[in-house]
Length: 467
Image 1 (cartoon, rainbow, N blue to C red):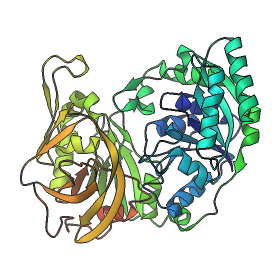
Image 2: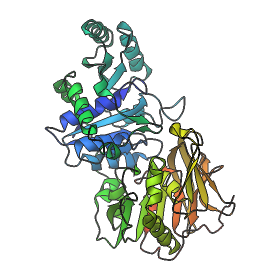
Image 3: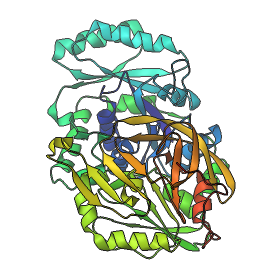
Image 4: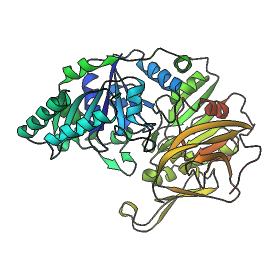
């Protein structure tokens, strides 16, 4: 599989729309595999939407080198071309003095030819200075071309193109004019997820418009020509993800407009552990019979009234937790499993507070909004007396207030969690956290929660923490 990487000079440069356009264009004639740097699960929903294949996340803070290589190789199976979308600016990462967690780190790890998307609004010759600085900052990043975004008229494009190609020695592969066609709907956590967007009849037209607009203003043949086969050899991670032992239990995953934040390899990891996987909608369905349940992140606050009205679902989920059926919930899923979600006066123009009953598994209540939390996390989970070190991230605007006797299984050395470095609240075999875990890096935790031997043996810690 030949691959290339798309990065931006900053957040908001337009790399997501341009990557989406390129993926859609290339998928018309080839099998395209996409990847996303860092732990964003919304952009991946768009990339999967236009290619028809799961998109996988690559993060040098969370994943080991073996996991990175194995996941890349697993995704490459059967694909003709790979596209890696960066995160924020090329060099943004965990801290100021290393490239850990950055797009640059992934570019270097896989020696990926990199295309830099420049927000060229109101600059011409200065665009060359910008590109030159990116080249000089880390020569090990192989910047092979530039796409100018938000360009004006022909004179603007000509000056910027001539300057970049003269001073930087690399080609300008496209110049995408400013256009309302390139605008995607946003909200507090980023883009509106693809699944939710598809409810709008005009959404598909917007996606098609982006693909057409990008296609009309880039040199697709030149972009394909710079792609290189940098796919690593399959390793133990690749083999594990591809293994399919006979299924001995079923895990049901909540997936609908309210719950869409999942990493591409989740189902592969579960299937490799002997689980059959089904999906259901907490908004629209009744709860299916299963041996375990997963409630991922998403936007339950945007669908709080609808979720609350599905009383049969809420009561069934509560009953399963009471019976000791394994349940795992992250962020939005955690919110859904608390007693209630309160949407505060003034949020999104709301007049007065509104309180919506939820599943009531965890003895706490959710308030929205409660301030922005966005960071990597690191900690240790203690499940059934076993310790599992982990890395992940947290990104939310809500807050959960737990009762004083609540038990927590995660101790964070980095990050906030539910409160003061405590995360992973537990009730019987139900576990809920603000921490998002990458399945390929947390397969031990998933195996502990959904293992065949779980039964009535609760995952509580030997010496549970309380508030």
